[in-house]
Image (cartoon, rainbow, N blue to C red; front, side):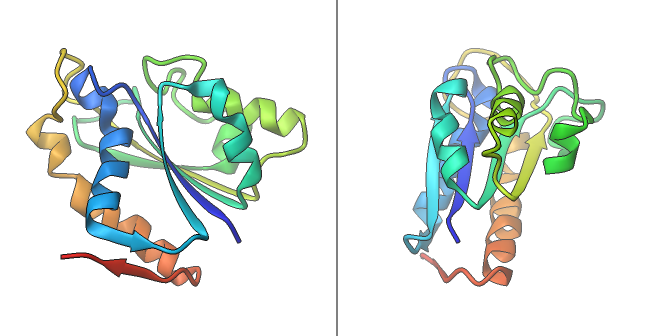
Length: 160
């Protein structure tokens, strides 16, 4: 089973780049086997449809525009995408992941399992660093995703 961990976002707008920072965090702290692909999707949107369609299991990491406090993490599953139960706009980059998945579904190529971990940003100010609020969320979210991958049978080594 091929699993894709896809981090979306714009690194030039601080917290908007959370998904990309998440991929970098995983690369620095864990070693994955070939059945797990880490992908810095940046703001590519529809340009990476093929990656999503080639995977059996997808974890998406992005910011969301939802009610709550900065740093709150929400989890959405494939049915949430297909039934329109996500916030109207997931993040400032469009065409977004939600639209990509809907296009894939129309083509009959949506992965069996899709999970989005969306986090509310503290700021979209220019800058390449995450706010302290979101930076503090990286280790816990990484452990959550790695734990799920291990439960699904993936072998992952934590680096020092």
